[in-house]
Length: 134
Image 1: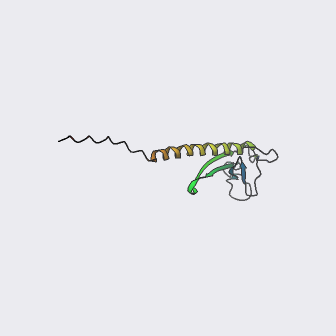
Image 2 (image 1 turned 90 degrees about the horizontal axis):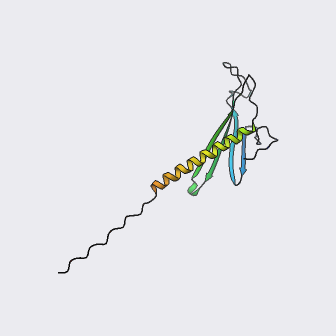
Image 3 (image 1 turned 120 degrees about the vertical axis):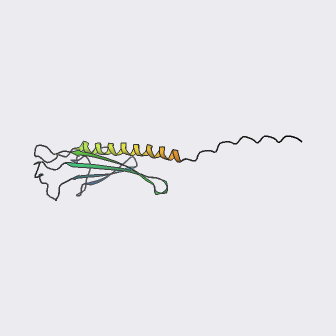
């Protein structure tokens, strides 16, 4: 995936932390979020740390009969030393790489499953023996 160096996370995200990237005819859905409880970024009262930031990616491909195969990936940027997590452009790449790997694993598993359900050719029957002459 190509990273946009002008963006803190390497991709243009909207106010809700969502992005859609289309490359090589494929569409990736990306989401950047933290596990904070409110709209203010606050430290955890027990650990004193800010929440980690999660970057999730989903790769989907639609096939025949509205069948959809998806792959999911997740990367995490931890906050350390009482400082909020800093945007990491490579985190989006990691999440996308994980989504593509998951997609390929699911694709090969479904292909193996479909192969076990493929109709098997019926065995050839031997020709009947001729009846003896009277």
